[in-house]
Length: 474
Ligand code: HEM
Image 1: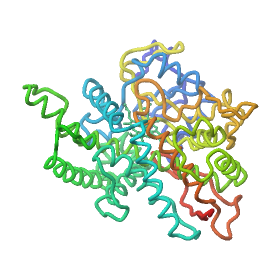
Image 2: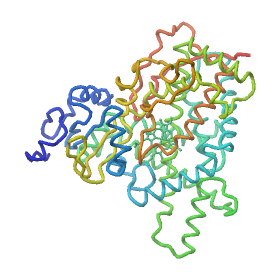
Image 3: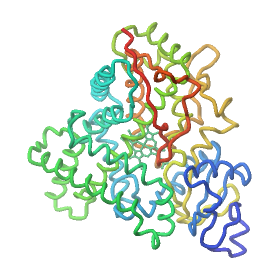
Image 4: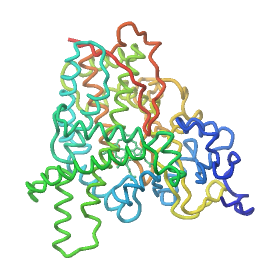
């Protein structure tokens, strides 16, 4: 703790911390973002909490988050990896890294994902193809109640696989399913209360079973990726890159041949970047899509309005990204799903790259900063009905789609989600194609009112376990 009187005067305010434990006892460790939201009502849009001994400055509300991440992008643009991440990632990849390595990996990943179709037709075709594999799985249930978790995860993950390895996998391929299942389990474990305690007190938490499980799952995923890489290496053709891994290997080779020995393009960075793309790109998008389906079951009238629009504008042909502009209601429903689902409620931890005075408060270089995205997506100053599923947030009085500034599920600024355009394309194609084929209803004997929208505990907020019925329309 630093409580020098001068610093203290300009420190962002906050609840009084206990020695060592800080404000941990005041936090709901299962849903810390809810406690932070409450604190923001009391202490304002820039406040301090102590997670154990660690000081964290929380940014709340659209105006403040934007002012920090966009207008002061450099100062607020570093990543602060949690202890559990540091355990198996020495600053490599894109998610948890900083400095030149992060810059190069992020730039290379963005360019290549674009080259392999992110936001383009080639990628659209892959998503369309995959959505039909997903439809086949749903069809097999013949309208009986199903848990959407695995099928949706596999379908979404296959898009990343196509871009990273250059090919998709069958849904019953154990090499693939184990990779996806382990990644998702890890994401859940990382947010468990015991890991949050471990992050603050690593010396007492080293023997926590959960931590060991995370390390084991990560090791297994690393091994499996190395096997996949070595197969790709055997058949590598520099003139015809199949995906991100090929492109990385070719770049690495070129740099080696030119005698560059200090480059960031080495095997460990490849491995970590691929693991990051998987972790960041599967669960997030799959979870959002599952929220969208659940919300359609909960609000059947809205589901009908989407279907009416799809029928009227598209009919039975395949929906394409180009159609989005003619489907304002559907587009609004997808945006409103992302807003309400709020799946990454505290973004990922940032830290300040230099001392900064922000809104009159002094924040020291290296301070952990949480951009509280929940407080942006539910900002009472920005949204007419912040806690309600209300697609009209994104429609004008004539039913045209309107963009909203406070729509920030992908965060903003220097560390804004790298996969935003891919995720948006996936959500649009998967959602519309599924709704063209199925009517989604509650399981027999369950009424819409009984459907629970309380999110499950995890790094990303997914729906609580549930089943729904996909009833074929034709
Ligand atoms: C980072 C949201 C899909 C790759 C992030 C962040 C958020 C986010 C909130 C943290 C930004 C920050 O630190 O301020 C989402 C949502 C998605 C989604 C809501 C889907 C609906 C994807 C996909 C990919 C991806 C499909 C893969 C291509 C990444 C990466 C980062 C990131 C690599 C780290 C960026 C960095 O630190 O420089 N995402 N994401 N995300 N996302 Fe996504």
